[in-house]
Image 1 (cartoon, rainbow, N blue to C red):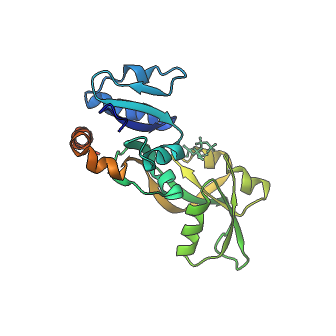
Image 2: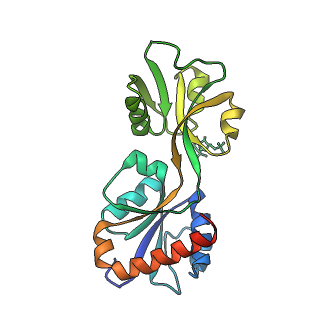
Length: 216
Ligand code: PRP
């Protein structure tokens, strides 16, 4: 809370923003200012005591963890990779995709004893996945367009987000295993949950009513 009895919610910019706004509108929140944000990063919602803060996914977690934002909307992919101390209270049902292990078509990833190299934007998720399997792999961190790594011969496989599968197909890769299911989550700062229980309960129940209505 920012001292003015308005809560702050950090929302992940990009793919999750439009669907967050659509949900808020169904909850009865006037989202005018966030719908046309320009370069401005904080927007007061006119008919509800909430300020929307637009941030990159890992920063949503940082702001909520530090209590400068009370609530946050962020993908489970970022939560799995970054972790942190906060409550994950609701699966918002949108932004659905999965982490998959993918290889070049025809590659027998598991059929060799040599140490395999796996490229990912999500090294911790990747390490944990192979640790659960008891497999020792070398993980190379890539910042984006991870599909390039096996094509260029840098890695035997990738662990990456797959939504429609179009990017994998277009690059001759096939998913061979699901690592984790992903969707947008509502997170809450641990102190805010106690201090602003009533406000957060109101927000949560509006969310849940709408998610129930849309069958999520
Ligand atoms: C993500 C992901 C894949 C793609 C998957 O990339 O890393 O490349 O989307 O979507 P699809 O299965 O529907 O094709 P993003 O666009 O976020 O950019 P990035 O590669 O720079 O991470």
